[in-house]
Image (cartoon, rainbow, N blue to C red; front, side):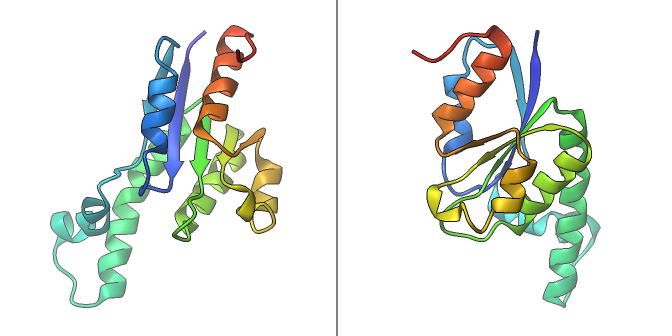
Length: 149
């Protein structure tokens, strides 16, 4: 068995690298949104032309990024959505809802401080983890049937 895993959400920490490194040796293909913050914000105007109004600047970027995000989620077997501590990731909430609506296996990753705020998102998930290592353990179990340790 192999898995395609889409890593969505917060882009300011190394949680993706921790999961990818921890999953070495497992038959998993990882995909993600563009994690270069400036490129992600400015892709719309860089490709489609400048916008004097910040709203339309952001809108163009969001729409171009949505093409990649929708494709990545649609092609994934498992979607991992990370909600970070510092920033509000509204796009991550959309990604979690979109994945759930498509019937994708959803793993949500966040700290205990977000439990109440994300209770509806967590309810759509098949697993809710607090640490990237727990996500790796879930993926390893899914692929091999082996428990951690």
